Image 1 (cartoon, rainbow, N blue to C red):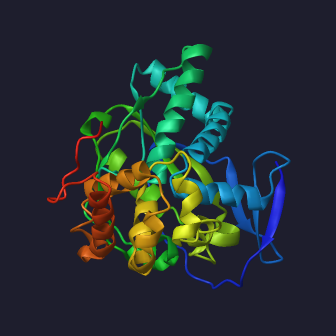
Image 2 (cartoon, rainbow, N blue to C red; image 1 turned 90 degrees about the vertical axis):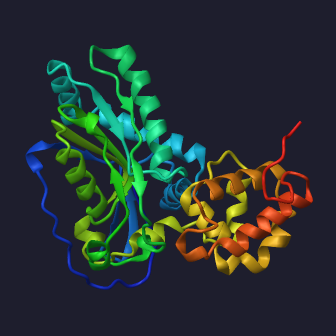
Length: 333
């Protein structure tokens, strides 16, 4: 383990959100990276290689949140290494084997377009199964999406702990096939525990025998979660600020158009700059963004705040022959 520090601003005291859990069925929670606030009011990170600094790790996490497939692989590898060397996790899999139960692995719900957590889920599933299928008689895990319904807050990451606890969020339809089986829940970060606890409640409510939760990172409640509820937004935007230029390195690499990327790309603050920016992107990248945004119904959802930007994207696709006058995509090649 290594500890690295970086300066941050002063913090504000907020109350801790209290959520009741069915703890006897939660076999464990694990995260290879911990973010906390030290006595010098600096953000510190434990975990990673000796050569990696806090700046390196926060930059990686920021890129993960905006859909970088390379960073999804990076954090998935660390999650799996930590899990498979953790006695509680191995015992969880052994109990599933002894009960002749299936082990499902899932993440927060998805409405056509993934979040960083969903990317992480796919990568973690692959890494775990590579190891489990070769090492012992422990069961491999079964990838399972949950469906998200409703609209969550556009600014959840910047909310205080009290706001997170009181907000009515979108919900996931938890598969009934989890009944009497073992479930692993994967998420990118645990801050206050609100999402993790709600997920636990819904998964156990359909009758899952046991649940184990895996995260890329956790925020130490003694240093941050109790005092700085908006730390998630600070981490998310450490490298990617939301401007179009800050998004460009992601867009020109191997990426998945995740929710956060789409929202920043199409946000009203960027509409004025979007026409010129589109000219700098490969056509297939623009097409990828458009397909994802329409799959998530961004023309109509969220009070249509993304419609003006999305119409600019459509006009661009029409101008280069990738969409017809009706707005339908044309056949390629």
